[in-house]
Amino acid sequence: MTMKRFHPTTKTHESRRGIAAVEAAVVLPMMLILTLGTIEMGTALRASTIMQSSVREAGRLVSMKWGNIVADGDTPNGKVERDLRNFVTASGLPGDDLVIAIVHADGAKQGQNFDISDSNNDLEMVRIQIGLPYSSISLFPTRYMGSSTVSASLTMRAGLSGGLSQ
Image 1 (cartoon, rainbow, N blue to C red):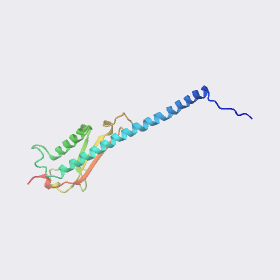
Image 2 (image 1 turned 60 degrees about the vertical axis):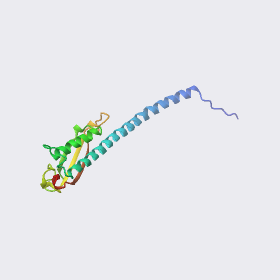
Image 3 (image 1 turned 90 degrees about the vertical axis):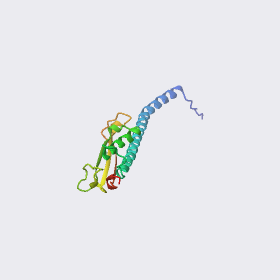
Image 4 (image 1 turned 45 degrees about the horizontal axis):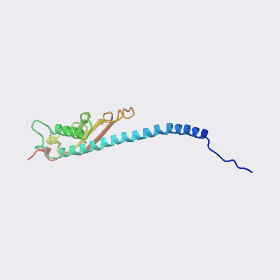
C-alpha cells in the first residue's frame, strides 16, 4: 500500500488569504467599536471625576466663613458658581457649558434656590448640583449619548452663621 503525501499547493495558499481577509473584515470593525467605546467611556469617567471634585471644593465655601473671601458687591452664590466654572475649565472641560443649581435639599423649600448668605439658612441642608451636556465633552459625534448629561452633586449642611466673620 502506498501512501500519498499531502503537498500544499499555491491554490491552498490563495484560498487561505481570502479567508483571512474575510475574518479581518468581520473582526476589525468590532475591535474598532470596542476601542472607541472604551475611550469614550473613559472621557465620561474623567469628566465625572473632575466635576465631583469641583462640587466638593464648592461645598467647602458653603460651609466656611465667607465674609473675608467674597469681594464687596459679590454674593457667596455668585462666587461658588464662578469657582465651579473656573475649576472645571482649568481641568480641561468647557466650564461655560455647566448647568449649576444651589438648592434646598429637604424640608418645605426642597428644590428652591438656596441663598448662602441668608442667616435663616444656617445649618439647613443644601444641594449643589452641576451638569454638563455629554455632547460638549464627547470626542466623537455620537447620537446614542448625545442627549445625556454628566452630573455631580453634593448634599451637605450649610453652616457657620451664614459665613459672616465675627
